Image (tube, rainbow, N blue to C red; front, side):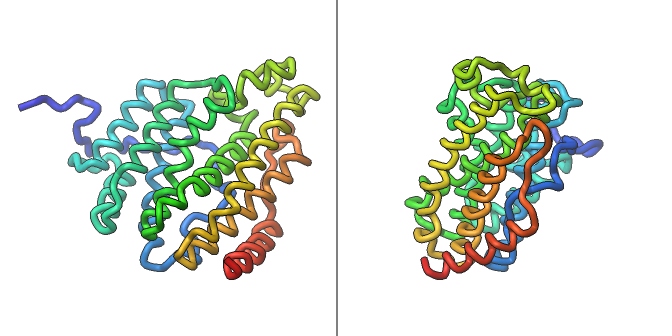
Length: 289
């Protein structure tokens, strides 16, 4: 019989999942809100918990890169049916997949992204960053769409929305990610084009050069959001259509706040008024769609 690698063997002593200490309580966008069909909310939350806990492993500054990869591999093993109680989020996700019939494809995609986070600290250009978003962000939207039985024709617009959300989050956390993890998602090519480097993230506020980089990334993100506006009309499920419309509106509002604010000086986030306005605008737009 083939031996099981130590890091894939079941363990009851300690969970491989661990909080990272990052901005877990400051999420920007609703996940599985009351707009989602009641019978699917628990499955949406199971996927979100799985992805969030895997992300926490990758973002934990107390873990080595090898330890992070081993823990993420263990989550993947439990997801695929390996026995053990050391990854409760993966075990719960396994149950959800058995109940819904949705495959593990999107779960393994996000694990691929977080393994990359464990070992990759810099991104060369926009295409390099979008390749990362394909695995870190797009699977979230695709999982929601597959749970609702939506057509894969929705995927391109959903991918654009999820990538936009990911970049906006990267810009929010740019200084913190560099300070805590030495991880920089701002493309090196863009930094060099404006005559600056990653060390600009250690300042008390954005320099003129760094501001130019941020604005250019926001311009590209605005194009993604424009593409994402085509998502709600394609979604057949009424609740998911409403939720996607609300999230598109929130993305636009966060982008505007990042244009006016300085994420190096302070974390720029959404306000309660943004959530209320986005709900009204998004649901009314979803109704028209």
